[in-house]
Image (cartoon, rainbow, N blue to C red; front, top):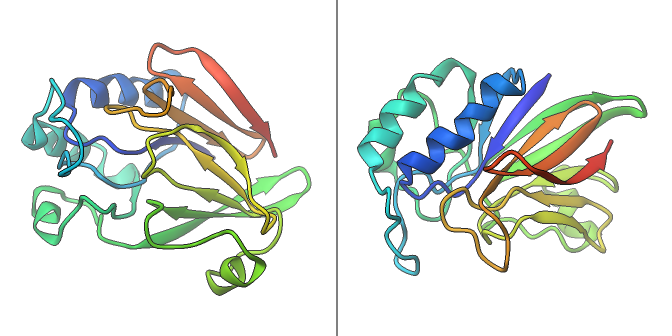
Length: 190
């Protein structure tokens, strides 16, 4: 399986179109949405391409290919725009890597702590499992003291911390981080 991972759209329609272009060009099977899909949030500027209704219409075209979790700027009323479930606080996918099955925990990043062994065990993880999260708008691969690997694709619309607007591509072999202009700038082998 190959997954396109998108986080923190915040209603940015043009950025979403660019991000979704990777779905076809990279031959992805599914799209993972890590939350904050429609609303810009009270601490963020309104994106120039802010068009939440169009974001909903575009994402609905992929409804049978979407795995989605809720972000802190998402509400139940937002789900009325979508024809796919998007209110789960977390989810899981499994990868069949060369070293065995790896569990990937999907979360926006604002609800679940992953810094200690006790915290990761509470959410069903163990050392060397992967957490895909957004929320901070800062992309990267982060190695936690708990032993999990936290991978954040950043925000496609409102990147922060010197990050470029970008996405992740996840397969059974690796997770790569790409800027929206198609440059792969970081990868993590599985």
